[in-house]
Image (cartoon, rainbow, N blue to C red; front, side, top):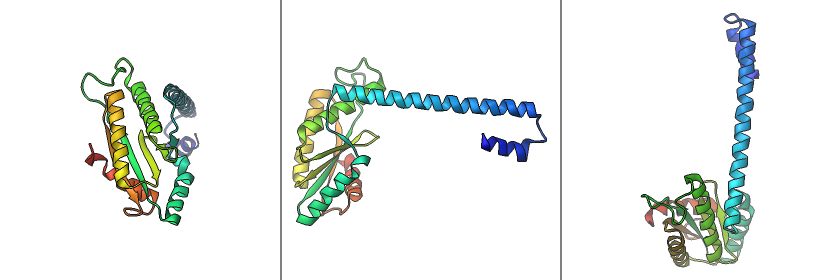
Length: 202
């Protein structure tokens, strides 16, 4: 509204009548209110769908952004005691062809994606150790932070996860690993290294 008033005052004042500008201002305000309401309802829908998928497949995955303190604590512990630590990044491949997701082909694509990600999260929660951090981001990518674990052990874990996902969901995953401190010294560098290896493991 303020931007429109500014433009009208300095650029459009002599070109249009006051009534026309007031109508346009009301239309701009109405559009803004409607857009805000649509965005709010979409956000509520997203939260509802996430809640439904999480309740269908309970898991212990945490949001990666809100878990920075836990990640930092694990890196500090590994650095202090000179213990290995590795991370594993996992991304679910969307299936190709008409068969689609196993036992889920009647559900809409968006719902299928949400429930599939929740199912993968449940699989990770079951296969990861209690000391491992299971994290996810907004893009549907998972990150496992595994203390006291080297790259060889990470590869074995990834293969078990890959087999479980294929068996239960008829789907594939891409995964990549990185080890501290041999390959990187910060979590962001570890994550970047692991993400670069995603396409090399499928």
